[in-house]
Length: 171
Image (cartoon, rainbow, N blue to C red; front, side, top):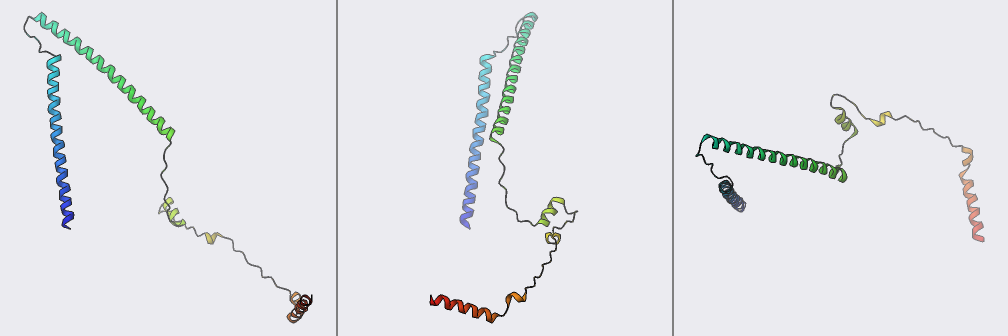
């Protein structure tokens, strides 16, 4: 009993260690993503120069607006391509399923009487009995009377057979 407890506690300890390591990795990935984003922004998006008169600031705003519009158009085009590719993938999946065919599950043998099967199909409200023997026709057997003339005397038959036996023995 103590062995099972020890393996259970050991398993629990190992699981908690694995979860702790995974949590550390996730935190490190988040930090790496933040530093990569800051590096990208510093390289590609320098801080705007706010010095100057209103005309240069308006020019800067128009330039930024044009850049934003261009990026939005690219994003829209990329989204359209992704949606088209997703639609094609879904169509291909459907074709694969159609070609492969749907797997039918193996049926299990169920021991069920005819009465319980009907009750399961029709529900408990309908009371139907399947007494098949009661639906069969009653057939009366005809009693044949054997003619006593054909049988005759049994002693005579035995004597005839004895004569035949002698006939075969002599030959």
